[in-house]
Every structure is written in C-alpha cells, then in structure tokens.
Image (cartoon, rainbow, N blue to C red):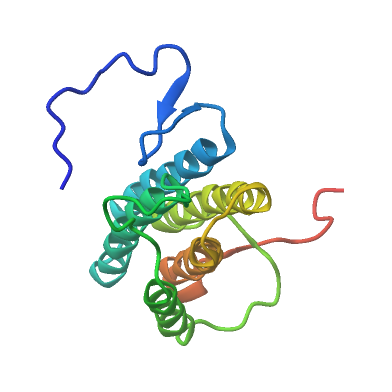
Length: 188
C-alpha cells in the first residue's frame, strides 16, 4: 500500500523522477512519457465516467484501476537482480476482460458504414478523447518497447483499451444511433 504524507519532495526540481525501483530518470524519458500518458488516459476515463450510465461506469471504474496497474508496470523496468517485491504487471486476464466488454457492448451496435467523428453525447465525446490519449500512450509504449523491455501485455492492454473506448463511445451515443459520421469531401 502507498502512504503519501508529503505531496512535494523537491526531488524532481532538477527535472528527474524516480521509477518504482528507485532509479532516477529524466522527466522527458520515454518510460516516464509512456506511464505519464497512461495517467492522462486515466484522467480522461474519469471525466467520461461523469456522463456514463451505470453499467458502462462500472466497466470504466475497473479500467481506471487497471490503468494504475499499467502505470506501475511501466514504472518498473525489468532488472537483472530480482527486486525485493513482486512487481505489478498487467496480466492476460485484464486484456481478456476488455475483450469480453468490447464484445458485450458491440453486440448491440449496428455495423458502421462510415468513420465516426468524435462527438455526439457528452459521454461519447469524453470517451473519444480518452481513446485518442490512449492511442498516444500506446504509441509511446510501443516506442519504449523498441528501446527497452516492456511486457507484451502492457502493449496489448493499451491496444484493446482504445478499441473498448471506441465501442463504448458508440454505445454511449444511443447505441450508435447518435454517432456523428464522417462525410468525405463534404465541405469542398
């Protein structure tokens, strides 16, 4: 469990931060950028929850907890020496739960005949924002995985989450009936 007695420590005043293993890295480090963008995704999901119906809200609440797990996963790089504690990692069951939620929400939606513009209801607009921030987190995590070891489940989770957020946005738009569809070349 984490105990936060002091919020500011001044240890980051020179532009560095500590990873979960105590290693100091620049706040511009790719690993820090990746888990920082996961945190942004979590904040966007929290905003979407303000507008979500109870069933969707429960799914989003579980996702917010998963996103903290994912942040911990990304903040704990693998080390040669085993750590004194079991690092928190995303597990396949968390990815599978997202897939099950996607399938459940998508079953009630009509097939798309065009791309969807972000918008519609307040819930859908917030979910689309969360989706785009999640995609950025995914791109950063994939870049990190090219440079350092990252668990494959971390990348899978972000990929599945962006799909979930898209389907959830459609569900929040009256089951897709309120989707704002792209009309190619409409304003030429």
